[in-house]
Length: 115
Image 1 (spheres, one colour):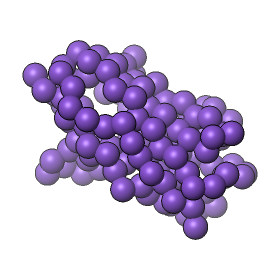
Image 2 (cartoon, rainbow, N blue to C red):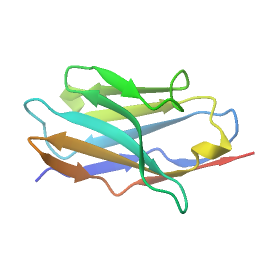
Image 3 (spheres, rainbow, N blue to C red):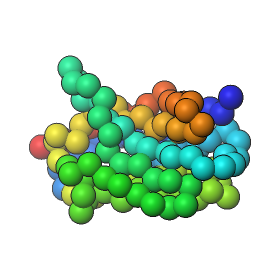
Image 4 (cartoon, one colour):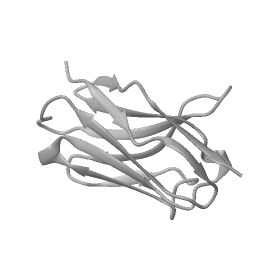
């Protein structure tokens, strides 16, 4: 079973940037999708961005133009570059992996954007 470990969260002022990383414990072979989700306080977890092993990405409307998802398959790592952060981006960011019908989640990393 692969494990996912997120890092890079923190406290940042509105307008600032953060880069999140999600490292898988082993190389992932075959078609798969890795994504970043956000869970704000008292809200459901929602998709922020996702990327296939081939590099095809999609974004939530709230992330378009500000966030960029990328992955380095050689390093078993997916990234989320977040620019022009807003207070409403605050939440716990979770990384996940979907492959062959199985979903694996990381433990999450807190992002707090102050106004």
